[in-house]
Amino acid sequence: MGASSAYARAMGACNEKRSKSCHHYFNLRQHARVRRRPGLVVAQGQDAYWDYVFSFEDIKLKNRSLQLAQKTLEENQQRVDVGILAPIDLVQAESQVATMQDALVVSTYASAQQEDQLKKIITDRPDPGLVLAKLSPSESLRRPGLTDTVPVTQAIQIALENRPEMKQARLALNNAQIDTDFTKNQLLPALDINASYTQNGLGGVERLKAALGANTIAGIIPGGLADAFSQVFGFNYNTYSFGFSLQIPLSNKSAKSDYDRAFSTKQLSLAQLNAQAQQIALDVRNAMNQVEMNRAHIQSAQKARELAEQTLDAEQKKFELGVSTLFFVLQQQTNLAAAETNEIQALVNYAKALVALDRATGQTLQHNNIEIDKANPRLAVNAAN
Image 1 (cartoon, one colour):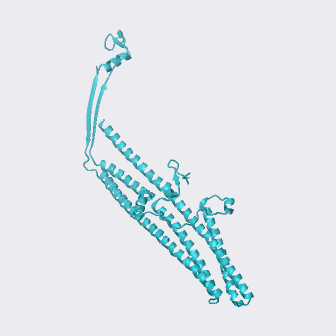
Image 2 (cartoon, one colour; image 1 turned 135 degrees about the horizontal axis):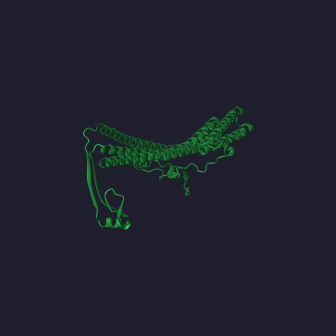
Image 3 (cartoon, helix red, strand yellow; image 1 turned 60 degrees about the vertical axis):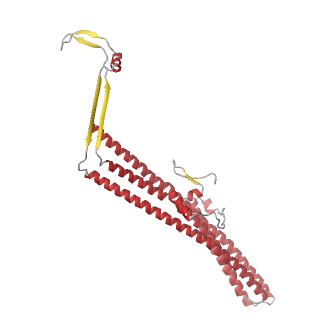
């Protein structure tokens, strides 16, 4: 009984260890598959959306620049008609209009490409209606706010709690710890103690024979199930047993090798956990730097655009007074168009930097009101959205 008990104990411990390991391995796969992929897809969709917003706003800027160039051309055509301006100077205004028309054409086709890319991310179904549909941005560009970010130390702490890679590394360490504990247990002596106490009872009809080996029945003693229960609860036939088995390993090199392997795996998992934490902290710092850089870029780009507007207005007045030339007016129009585009690009870069920060802190799904059904992993948009 001692050997059987030791075998059962060993098999039970092995099954328990495998069950825990499999459970943690399943969690590893679930965290890696269920959370990382959706977050990546959402971030890619957001980047494509803001690229489309830029192209959408850029078309508006190019239209305004074209209208301004056409207005300048019409005004200077009138000056040529009345003899104030030489006809040769009108070529510069016509060239400006052609340049702005070309920029509008390029921006229009670039916007169409960005729109198709966004449609591709929205769905993988070859729906002709969706291909021909026109997308209109529902969320416009906005200026930076004070509540857009949190302190970098807090952001790193949030990332360490939310990033799927960190959760996966912790589960890998827990799995290695289970393996280490199990293999360490196999190095210890095994002591099995068995004890039992039984009560017996006999019931039924008893036939008495006349002599040993004879077939003649001398008498019959009636009995039944009640006799058996009477003997059991009367404690007439008691049986006791006690035993133990002690196994002391003298040279268990195989178990020692398994323990060394498990311990090395645990140390490696711990090192990988620390390395992952360092990488996540670096990702958050880089993302925060990008946010702050684009925040400052928006301020400088806005100032540059305002100065470009003032410069164009001043150059236009100087031209009307005859102290400037059409060349400088057209040059300032080009500078203003570039400054406006630069400001829109800065706003888009800031929005994309916030997307990268959400991804670095592991809050992409949370900030977009997306939940994952753990029982049946799938994306579900929160009704509050």
